[in-house]
Length: 398
Ligand SMILES: NC(=O)C1=CN([C@@H]2O[C@H](COP(=O)(O)OP(=O)(O)OC[C@H]3O[C@@H](n4cnc5c(N)ncnc54)[C@H](OP(=O)(O)O)[C@@H]3O)[C@@H](O)[C@H]2O)C=CC1
Ligand SMILES: O=C(O)CCC(=O)C(=O)O
Ligand SMILES: [Mg+2]
Image (cartoon, rainbow, N blue to C red):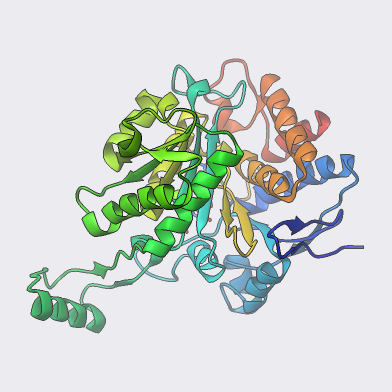
């Protein structure tokens, strides 16, 4: 009988063999990638006597059509109640309209870590010579920054009021025809993110954590993020980690915590990928960095992620990419990102064997040069298959 996942007082998850897991199909290519990924997840779970009782919850266009709400309260309460879920991508209009539902879910459930591992899988085509050197794990702060959406439209009463206040109180002469956004970065938000990154590095035997920021320019937001990061290391992790300034770059057998300015980081992750391991960064930097890094290991079709609150136990796993509207409903795109997000979810639930089997079967499929269009266009002699056929080929190799 299907049961809920719960969390023990000591913070461990209690996962039954047949957990109820809510899912959002997603807009655009959601109709293609979700069933494909689900097929593989179900087959892998079954091998180990597990059976996910999937519960569809609505959000985005499907929710609006069926209920008149973009994010029904029932969806939020199911994610809250059932702890762990997975979602397809949701569309966010540009320059107006509804605010991001993806961001809303992260904020409502306070999923403060956006965890995006970036590694190369055997056989995946890549534009760089040594994709195997890319093995980074991004910890992106997920609730603050300009990304939080505190902004006013140019010409609105609120924008005028705020600009006037800033002029009168602080003498800030900002152009009157400006839209304005606020960039909140808190000590609480920064420290819990860096804490999670260092704990992850410790648990996975990682060598370093790099704090990526633009603190030379945005001193009291991004610069403060860096300073608070080093403070956490000094105050809470001195037995296992050390900041660059405190060890002159020689951490001994401890985890080295260093920092790098965001612009040069985007060059160095490409030219010296082996110098980066775990990366902790702010919301917008993490957004840019995750798509850029995905390119080095085969692209956004194979870029998974999870939004997690390690304290409450809530998590929603989702691909890094969006709804790719031009491909919607064509059964064409790569289901790899959402499938590997499912792999992350299985690992999070302690279903390591099923997770490992999916990765092995995915690599075997790519090794046999059976791939979707995104890989096929970069490979010689590949057999291009549909999204659903790719999933079936993975199941055949489980
Ligand atoms: N978490 C979420 O739900 C996210 C939602 N979005 C939203 O998605 C919408 C579209 O955003 P957009 O900027 O176009 O970015 P997308 O990530 O949706 O698509 C951009 C391009 O990436 C490639 N791509 C995306 N997904 C896949 C896949 N599964 N397999 C292979 N290739 C893929 C395609 O490249 P090519 O053209 O080269 O084939 C596609 O045209 C926006 O509304 C945005 O806000 C964006 C990011 C995250
Ligand atoms: O919410 C959106 O539409 C975009 C989000 C996004 O790009 C991301 O989280 O990586
Ligand atoms: Mg993004």
